[in-house]
Length: 229
Image 1 (cartoon, rainbow, N blue to C red):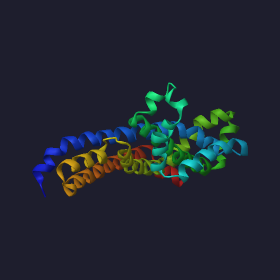
Image 2 (image 1 turned 135 degrees about the vertical axis):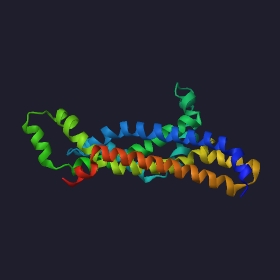
Image 3 (image 1 turned 90 degrees about the vertical axis):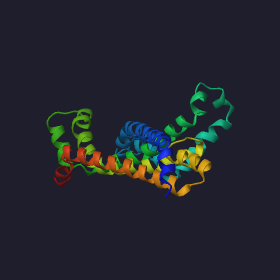
Image 4 (image 1 turned 45 degrees about the horizontal axis):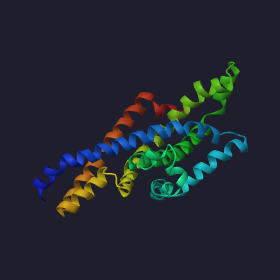
């Protein structure tokens, strides 16, 4: 092992690691916001309400993230209307293309997680809320969504870890996140083993930190006790 080389390039890899965490953080938070109405609509009893989120979720869960990245980054530029629109400064930037694609992709998975969590809520709790005089919206905001959040938290944490690993695909559209930075350094040093080993360590540390963070959150929210009721 060339330890001197590894130490020399550590600051650059840290830059890439920070960009990776930034991409994942924005994507999973924005995806969660987008997924809440989608998950609520997917759990509706009305077929016409479920139709739109079903099509959205079917597409983004049924196609690879890499294909979606290419469609947004390379595909949108093929349309003259897009190049002439106000969105072009955003859609020509690989950073925002990666953020948009990752957000849309993870929102589909989180929406399905929320749908399952909502349907897992005992019907008696919802009936009790209605019996107390709550409207549908009040029951949704004060009973259903908080309860579903606790049920969905372990699965949501898994989705965050998966997005951390999937963020490596952003390197294919010229972003110098952790994987992209590693490939750039390897092109200069011709030392793939040391550089990819360091990148793997950074991914492991980030994943471990996220796992511990969600464990603490689950403990604070008493998710295990909630699940057993």
